[in-house]
Length: 222
Image (cartoon, rainbow, N blue to C red):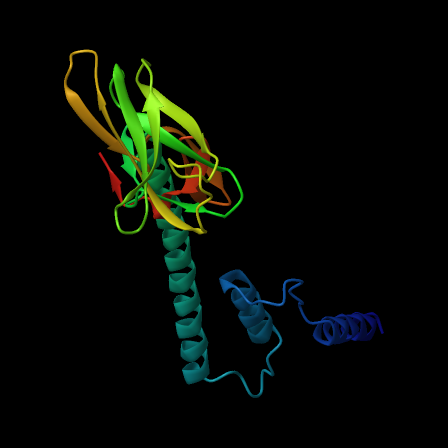
């Protein structure tokens, strides 16, 4: 009787385990989940009809594939992190260098004031800022006074040298000036020193003048 009771308990336990299979809360089978299921299948297989060798080898091969994929994914994640860190370091190391946006233009809207920045790499003794139309014709000239090198902001009221309101459009901004040694210098909008770097959702933004600009908009750093 005692042996029969034990056997019944064992059978009940076996039935209970068989009716409550392992469930992965994530809904995705990893290599550890695959191993658990394989061991459970071997443990509760029918002794009179055991799993054949071919099936065991097939599942073992699948396990090895999962293991290899898991290791590959980990390696790719580490590589991605390393590349991201290297890129961030490369961008940060560009602080203090000069960046070019590849164009020296501003977008002007009629009857409004346009604001723009200009970078003077040397001290300014005298000179002027020129605003040109698409054909290179002078529209507005702004005189420069003595100033130290650096980035300066300018406001243009949208009028030409004769006081006429100009139309909407894209205008070039350049400056020709003399430094304190009397040497002629030239600068233009779109060229600024990189003052700082900010990362937004993994995207690098560099401060050029008074604005933060996506690094992808920069065409040259020197």
